[in-house]
Length: 397
Image 1 (spheres, helix red, strand yellow):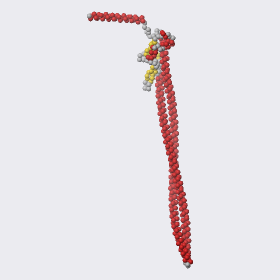
Image 2 (cartoon, one colour):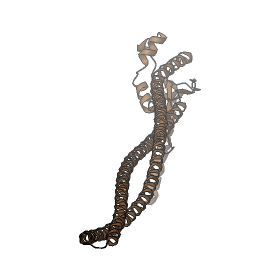
Image 3 (tube, helix red, strand yellow):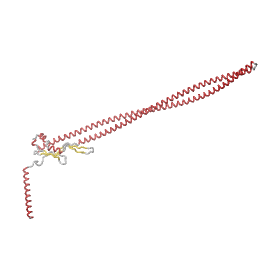
Image 4 (spheres, helix red, strand yellow):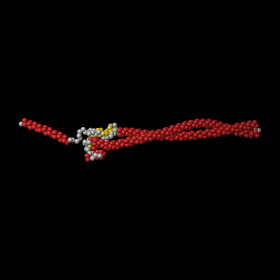
């Protein structure tokens, strides 16, 4: 009987295969030769262990085959023993193969479970990426909102600058009005001065006329000319009337000056108010610019946050690639394990037990007869050789 032990092929990372025997053939042969299975077989077949035939096993040279023979005249009994031996060997060796297959199945199941966990991890990572992309969109929308706010504030600044320009134009108009009032006031002051000078002259003339009138009146008492007295009197009255007219003009001019001064003060007050308004507008402009600067700072912070999120997304994508590579490695390992499992061979019976064509035990009588004939032939040949040797020596002498 010839059998081959179970074996499996192992493929390394380079794709090369190595044959691994479950049990080395020499070890099986040694176990058989040491009668490890004799008692089991005897008990199974109800045989007397003391008369149990001898089993002989050997590893056929340069092969993985085990050849087993038995010395037994009863051919059927010998076949039963060999079949029983094969069944026991097959059971023992296949147990080890079953253990190996179970180990492989466990490894495959473990790697498949790990792949499922990694796939779940990839989904979680993709969900994180989707969430982070939503965060980026929210932040980008926030930036757009703030940029629109900046545009509105810049438009507001432009409106305030136009308002300032309008008020500056109003200031120029008021300044021109003030200048006009001041010119009018200067003219009025000149008129007042002229009127006052004229009034002084009229007053001087009246004083002179009154002196002359008093003098003429004294002369009249002494028999002077009455006509001269009348003329002085008329001229004095005319000068008084003219003086009153000048005084009325002076009063009017002073009223005009008061009105002009009041108008100038009002216009100057308007200028002060406009300056205050312009100052307030400028303050509002600076406040808006500060707000714009704050918004720009906020935008920078948001952009920095977006950059961090994008870096985080890159990190997550790198993690996904690592997990995918791990899955690919695990799938390759599973393929190798499945291939290893597919290449496992159970113990096989290569040659069924057969009886020998010649008797296994030697015939003693025949062996003695053959030995006697061979001994007689050898002795005869030796006698002839010795006789020939003696004749040769005699001739030499």
